[in-house]
Amino acid sequence: MSETKLVKGIVYGALIGGALTMLDRTTRDGVAKKSRHIGKQIQYYSKNRQELVTNIEDQITKWKSFYDQFASDATYISQKVNEVKEITPQVKMMLTDTKEVFTQSKEEYKSIVIPESDEHIVKQ
Image (cartoon, rainbow, N blue to C red; front, side, top):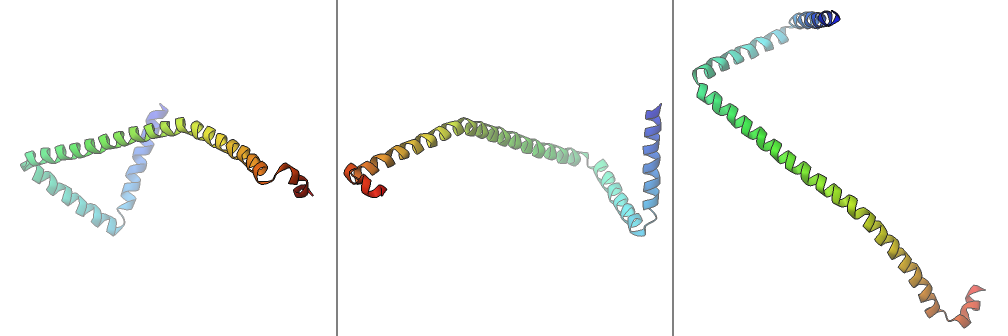
């Protein structure tokens, strides 16, 4: 019961809103111009149906191609994201290992550069 009231309210609101917008002269002129254009197109394509079919097929082909390219791109991006997810822990581990190696090397270089007998001089 309430659904029919809702639908009626929407329809009445749209009709009233449409009627009110027609009070503006530029809107009326625009609607009339567009209606004439659409009427001419209907007449043209009713006489040239094969051209209409060809145009529709071209649009379908264009949108299908767009969809296929988009799906291909989405798959590629998804694969690259998964690769990055797999590589990230490896890179993190490599960085940690590199840091540890540099830390160890630093200590070894200190012992090479500063002999143990001279350490007490540097500490003072």
